[in-house]
Image (cartoon, rainbow, N blue to C red; front, side, top):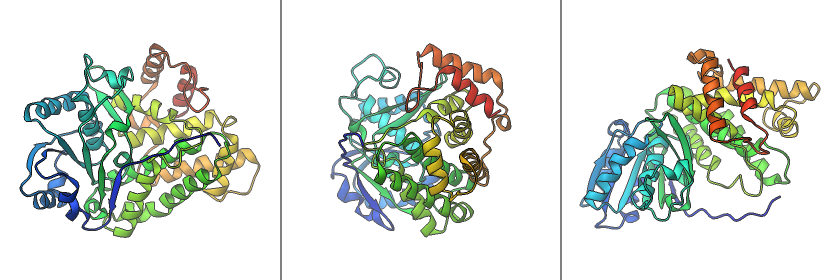
Length: 385
């Protein structure tokens, strides 16, 4: 196992009626910007509760943050934050809203020429406005980490950054706010959390026995929980398990001391950038292709995954691996998510655009051992046509 340091300062308030503590979490007298998406907060009751428990606070609202949040929208919020002297950001929604809010928080104090440099060039985040979150869509785990993924419409790019400066001070996780989610969003959340775990698990043996077992526990819980929560988001117990799995999948705990991959995400982001596909959909497409192409390099962990997660014990090694890939595909597709590019009208010209973009960025090799060259990216995507 590799050396590591682990610190996660995010306070989690999980369960029913935790929003009642909201005015204890934000200093009285704060100038708050409330960020949200397309308006679901007016339907699930959270907006009414916020107004109730933040009565007397100054609140400026900024709605309309889109799925796959954009740089352009975030910059509009930054202008308001500066003009209104906002000193606290409260993000209410799913991963898109929270990611956008992190980018807003980091951009306000950015001293370079353009905050996009934080994503494009890895410019350091020196200072950030404090953030709190109320999660209404379990999926990304962003409520308990410093990660953010942002798109730029003008250049059709989707990039990420990570900084401890934008970790939320607190996150309220009440499964009751998720009971009205449509099946498609629930499915996306399940797949997103699943692949987050995989990116930290499906690498190569590194002696992180506890990390492996924890990762497998999250995967198995997602598999067991998926049918109930997908068919009935109002099932509080199932939604609670999905919500906590999603958070635990990416709060840093299962990645300490072990290698990580993230190639599936890097490739998937390009499918969103060019075609606007849901993030989880891109992951479901890329993952089986990546495993199939890199089967020999990931053999040890694929066999472990087959045995411990899917209880596949019969057949030779190749048969076990192929069956585990097939069962993963079946898991995704039973949630209504196709794993084939052709389903979404994507063909070889888009693949060529992605490969060329990787070359221009000088991404010579990505993944846990930097084995995935632009040429292998093409092979992975061709496999999924």
